[in-house]
Every structure is written in structure tokens, then in C-alpha cells.
Image (cartoon, rainbow over all chains, first blue to last red; front, side, top):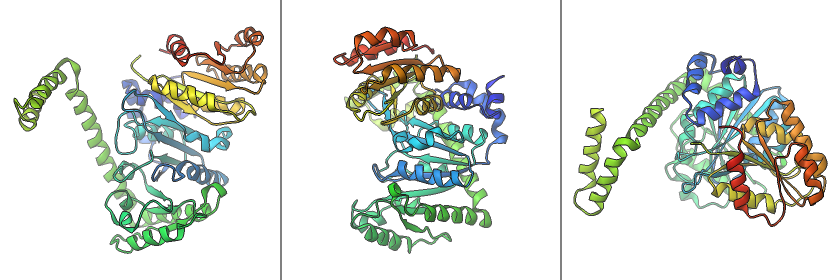
Length: 311
Length: 132
């Protein structure tokens, strides 16, 4: 049996292997995904994002368990950073998900960013499709711990849950552009700590200025004690309902598909640009010239662009 | 190989000490590998499930409790049952010399005892990964 048949039959190893092949940019994986793409799109994709140590993994674990109790099949893709120096990584999100490990209806996969900025890896989109075709009802995407501008998640999922914790900064942080704008649902985790209510209030105030029809709810949770999880899930379901009823669901998926196409074209262009045998040598030479002030970076980039266009 | 080697570093059994496992995880990371760490007190079944889902090349088991003769071969057997015997299984921790031949017979490819330089483990993995 080939890989696509095995995947359709719910073969766990086939799903795992396909994700690796997507990560390694194996053309065979994309042939499988091209063929099976019409069978994807059934899973509801939930993004979990927030700063490092906010409790994203623990929260994902609890939300997944709550959905398992409702009989749903769950995929989890957990992304952690890859070292820009060695290419290695420590993928530690599973530590918080030990109990889910023995549940046959749960599939957890850890990924390194492998040089991709934005909070996800290049292969995340492909991995979502694999788990979608594999038959998962819900897929959680847990981003790396984000700072202020890693917003790729919003281009990838249906509902984005922004996980915050008390004590990270004043109300100016809450009104800054970037990650604070992408939450469809806000969770203030570690709500048993001082300042949690204040953090929730500050987020609430910021959200009062939103002009969109959907007003993101803010929920206080203590993930480790399973407090507020059902309420959070309820908010996610309400958002899902809102998307479906307003036609926003299709609009979002079209927008996300556009982002994905642009991303893939960019990846292809980068691989042309950084092809060792020709352009990268040219760039290396130009880099020296720019550093020595023999030319400027604007002219240099125009020259490279001309050469790329000629190919 | 133009892809990172994926290694599951796991702690089977009941001992609560993972300093060694973390040191190894960090060393493998610095050698350019993707290290999936699953935390303390894992059953062989949990370890094997994670290894399958993560599609790893290597399972590295750290154990200090003395239960290695039971737990390590169990991981190998469960992997075989899943048709995943192309995964390299290695062990480390406080393991008496006398037990090593039995572990190797049971399918543990190599055992690294305290004091082994991390470079030895790294080289071993690089040279013995079964998958291309």
C-alpha cells in the first residue's frame, strides 16, 4: 500500500512519515498532498499563541482533553524554536501532554521552526493538511513563545487563542500593534496570581476599541488546575459559530489560502535566490563590495533581482 | 544526510532525576539534532507512542532507577510490534557493566554509562542512524 492509501486508512506511521517528508521538502510528500488536498478542510484549526512560559502547552493539553471527553479526535502540532547557529532544537511541548500520549485518538507532533520566522515553521501548513486528511476533528497549532510581532498563526487557523499571563507589562503593552490584535479569544492564564484581574481588565479595555463585529472574550483560567477550560472552550465554539453564521469562515479560509500561495511562491523564490551554484556566489561578491562601500545595497539588490528575473 | 536527525530523549520508569537526560538533550541540540524531550516517569508504551508520532530516528533512554533490564527491552519490543525496528534505541544512566551484554542482546544498540563524553554519544548516533 502506498503512503496516500495508508494515510486514508488512518495509519499513524504513514501520517508521521508524511509530516517528516513535508519538513524535509521531499517532493513525494507534495505529490501525495496534491492528490489528497480535496479530502482536507474538515478539521477545525485552533491556534494557541502567547509569550514564552505563558502556559500554551498546558492549556493545549487541557483543551484537547476537554474535547476528547466530547469524543472528538485531536491533532496537535507544537512548534519550538530551532537554533539559528547549529540547526538543532529542543522540542519540549510534549512534557505537558504526557496523559494524551496513550490516547489512540490523539496525534501530537513537535516541530522546530528550522529558520522560519513568524512563530511557525514552513512545514506547519503541510502538517495541518496531513492531520486533517488523517481524520482529526480539531487541530491545535501551538506557536513558539511569541514576542510582539509573530503573527503567522492568524494566517493559518480558524480561531486564534491568545494566552496571556499577569505581570508582563503595563497597559501600553496591551495597546501596541502586533500580537495583541490577533486574538479571537483571550485567555489570562495563571489567574491565581496577583494582577490577573487587572491584566484581564486592561485587555478588555483595549478590546473595547475594536471595530470588528466579533468582540473577543477574555477568560481567566488556571490551566494547570483545569479551571476555566470549559468556559474557554465555550468561547471557541461561539467564535466558530460566529464565523459560520456570518460567512466569515469562508472569507478567512480564502484569505489564508492567499497567504499560503504567496508564502509558497516566496519559498520557491528564496530557493532560487540562494541556489549555491549561481546567485549566492553573486550575492557573496556583492556583499563584500557593499561592505567596502564600492557599491550600495540598493544597486546590489537591483542587480540580483535582474538576474533572478532573467532565469 | 541533509536533514536534522530526530531524537526522542525519554525517561522510562520511576526515578525523578533528569539532569543527565537534559545534558544529553542539550548536547544533541548543539550537534544540530532535533531533540524531543518527553519528561519524567514515562511508561514504555508512552515512549513508543511518542517515537511513532514524532517519526524519530533515535530513541535515547535515560534510566537511574535500576529497572533497566525490564523497561529498556520492553521499549524495543513495543517498537518492533509497531514495525518500527528501524529506530535506533540507545540507553544511558547508572547501569552496571554486568547488565550491558543482556541489554545489547535485547536490542539496545549501545549503553552509555556515567562519565561518557557527550561527543562519544553524538558520534555514535551520527554513525549508526539506520535510516538514510
